[in-house]
Length: 91
Image 1 (tube, rainbow, N blue to C red):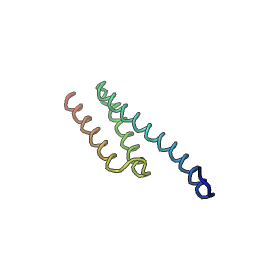
Image 2 (spheres, rainbow, N blue to C red):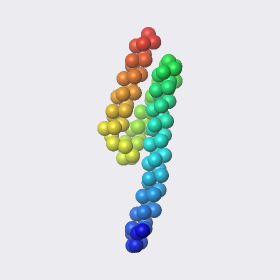
Image 3 (cartoon, one colour):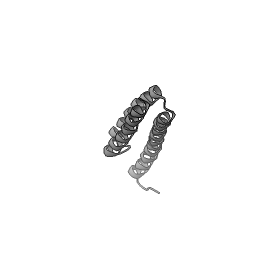
């Protein structure tokens, strides 16, 4: 347990930030899953829409240091690769 006032405040802040970061990471996982499900279903319009929203969320999470910016870039790259492969497969 923290003894000083400063340590107590840091504990409170870290608990709030942890909850926020966990929620943001969970949202990212859900978004990525939605893109992959849309690709699997073959729904081109839904895939494009979900991909754009997911990229936006990934960029925001990286900017807020919830995830590392290289991880965000890697995830965007992998999703876009699947998106392009699905487009080629459809046409």
